[in-house]
Image 1: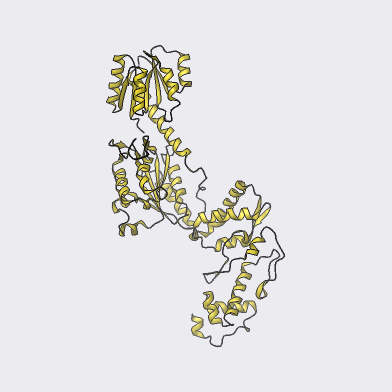
Image 2: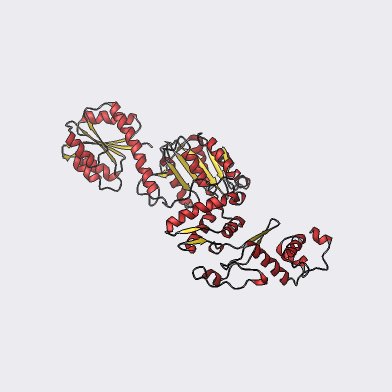
Length: 492
């Protein structure tokens, strides 16, 4: 993360010229001043990243300017230079905000070391400032689950993480693509360098270029100071382009240049800045289709898709649901200060049966709601989930009616459960088991169709053979006979 503009405040002409020449050889923009008054004029016209500040000047003490600089919104780093150094003076200057303290005469190697330390420290400050404005809400956990799909995903991460390859993570919304990106980062050689995230879908189109590449002072209305972009902040580390498919075609072209040349220019600037970053991108779209529709540049897709990683949806790894549920339950009991004694088998069965269109994020929200509604000392039940009850018959999922408002209100004030419809038996806690719920739905369908098993089976989305077997299981096979039912119907 390079320092760009440096001021040399030194009254000794020879020393000032010598230091200026050394800095210009290192391609810094250098301004010089011999007095405090000249330095104030320069500070009024421009901002500086670093100041070499002499202690004794013709019109005052450099330490006075050091204290004044600490009150500015954008404080440059200050290196104190003096020919009359002492331990007490050095301690006072460092306490006053100085970054370093050099005793004249100093060598070129000393300046080199000071500049390198200043660049590293400056980047740490900027990254810390950026992270302090990020959302501090914990975004999730480690990758959880022992299903074959998750084991294969972990194995792929272990192979890819140690490399410098660009990675494209694809998957439905809520599957945990950012967790995969963070796992790649933590297991990479860049784990001790910055990890900078850019949510491409959340940044307005007119600002995304500035967010990516930064801008110079006066580049546009409101650009009152110079600002580093996310790529500069990620220098030496990893940048995550979250939902990269939302980027406009204009910014796509500039992204391509960064990926190819590892260099950029700030908005309103003409200085080329080299960056060393590893790029990880995520998307919930099918980018191949976006390329075919001319919505996404093909060359950029090829650059991003060096190593593709597909994150499986939750419905394809249902065996992980109990472990995820347990982890979310413990997290939200701590967060909300609620003591939950566990989760019922019926509740766990309902979680397994749900399709989870919102994937792990939806499960997380459902469990948080259930913990809150359960109350202190309770056990998570189906009624706390707020899901549409579902029954699974012949691999066909059928929606059941949502509970009534009165039933929802009974969560906090339980009342004796009414007798279940169609002769089914309610459990002592007022809930129906999944088997009893299935029976209720089948009998309701038969009543709605006047006992016609063919029509009832179509209404339920199951075969007539399955319906007939269920009725015999309930001991009601003779009651509902369909004279029109035949072999063809059975085959259906």
